[in-house]
Image (cartoon, rainbow, N blue to C red):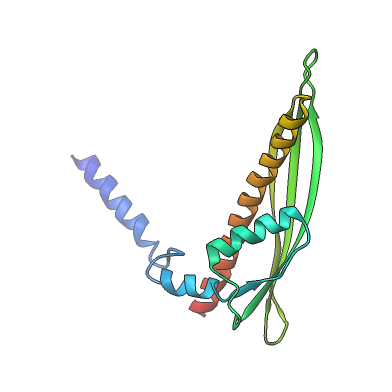
Length: 165
C-alpha cells in the first residue's frame, strides 16, 4: 500500500513537469487546420512530387487564392539493389525518396521554413514484368505517403510555434 502511494506521488510530480506541453491538435486544432489551409502548394513536374503534393492538398485543404504561404517541393529518387539470394530469381530493392521543401511567405517571398523529408521502402523484383512494375509503383506510393505526412507535421509544428509567439 505504501509503495502504491509513493508510485502515485512520483507519477504526479513527473506529470506536473509537463504543464508546458501542448498537443499539436489540442484545443487549437481548428485554428491550426485553418492555418494549414493557408498554404498554397506549387505545381510540380515529377510523379513522386505530384503524389506528395496530392496527399498534402488533401490533408491541409490548401490552394486558397488568398493564401499567405507558398510551399515548393523538389524530389530526389533513388533505387538501389539490396540483395539477391543465391539460387532464387528474386532481387530485393530499396526505393529512397527525399523531398526537399521550402515554405515562403507569399507577400514578401521570404523563406520561413526549409528542410527535407525522406522515406526508404523495400520491394521485391521477381522477374515478372507486370508484378515488378506494380511492386515498384506500390513502393513509390508508400514512400510518398510517409514523406507527405512528415512534411505536413513539420508545417503544422512551424505554424503552431508561430501562433504561440
